[in-house]
Length: 220
Image (cartoon, rainbow, N blue to C red; front, side, top):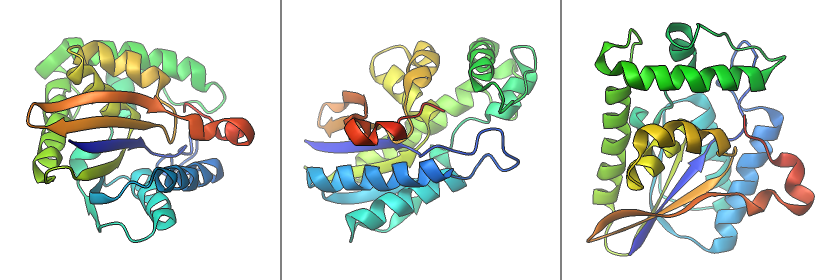
């Protein structure tokens, strides 16, 4: 069977004017991800990333370390949900505050629950059903593009990974919050793809951020 590696982007610039930009730590996280994939000796037949800056920058840094991977296919279906829009319309309208990211995360968790419950009736530009359909569609397309025994890699975001892992374990709605809350920047989730479909093999691997590299471990 082939494998699909879902890599969460490096740390973004939370609270900054331009959130969609890797922090200095995020840049280093991306390089360490590349070093980890190189250590595993994985050869990728397909590489994808979303169109967000933090996703594209993570892909570029990681794949540069790998050396000689296939051209990265940019696909906006791998983009994260719009957390600012969701927080604005659900969960009390919380704003991103760099002084207290934990408080914002708690408020966002509730906003995500409300967003899911609202379904097609959400006032957000993208509803939960639309988000679910696009990310599962992106995964199905990639799995179909892989030949027998071939591997693929995607540089995406925590919410996308959380929903896909939730879907593969039968609880996409719950997975959106529960998996998303613990997904680390630069974490690696591995799926296996074969004639029986796609299955979750491992979630949120981050041993590459242990020991001396533990200072790079971040969740938001």
